[in-house]
Image (tube, rainbow, N blue to C red; front, side, top):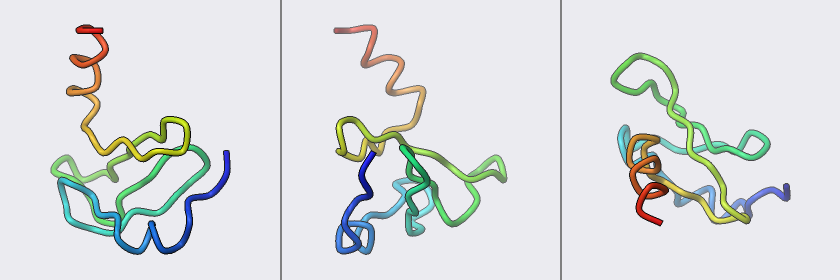
Length: 64
């Protein structure tokens, strides 16, 4: 998986915490802890950041 451009990472923010996101392999991680105290992760779908919580992604997949 290719890295996202630095300009894109500069503007992306975690939708829950508002913190910057950093890319680690094929996921984006928040730089601030979420409500449960851990970092939040978001996937990349063909290089496109998917900034939805896992519970919403599960529901979206079920409707396809």
